[in-house]
Length: 293
Image 1 (cartoon, rainbow, N blue to C red):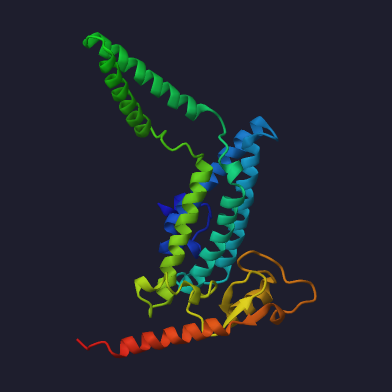
Image 2 (image 1 turned 90 degrees about the vertical axis):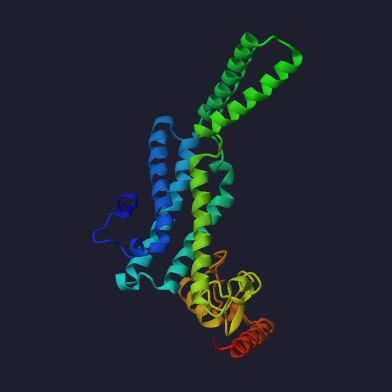
């Protein structure tokens, strides 16, 4: 079933398609792909300058970035590595960066209605239900101000229920809703793998020690350094490898200035290291004093 919904047409399944934790995200990506095709068809009919054309450009660019990230993931590992928690976390982190950026930067475009069909349908249901209820009530009961007020309330309740049942309650455009759901899903997956990579932590530890976890490895840092490009702290080896390969911040994509070295944008975070060492000592002490059952 999943193979039919995904848009990477490969046989046997690609590496990403064998990752069970990513199934929901892949389904949402497929929905976004279908939405792109729908917008492309509408854009060809309405031409440049139409909201369909503008939305198609935004979503098409997003999908191109997503495809590049996924293709790199598929090529840089065998199927046997499909459940590598660190690799999957890094994949999801990169995907969430591009999805969140579009969600925040292009929100005005994505939230612009393509047409007035939904609003018109809402009005037809509302006024149709209101009129029908008032006429029926007037026929069955003796008219009075109190009864009209009661009938108006009944009509409003019926209208709201009908609107909800036919799927018109949510007026957010499909493209924005899909992207929002995708963003939320990716963040849930990141949290799941963060727990997998930090077995020493209890569930209630994550919120309090979030700053101890490297954004790249999702493991508690041992040699934390601050990256001057974005102000975030990372595990030294992880951020050095990233900057050597990409020359940009993994958070905000700011580039290392021409002529600067990787070392020049990294500062040892001694205060954070001290806090992490104390936290580790506490955890080790707690475990050593646990009763043996």
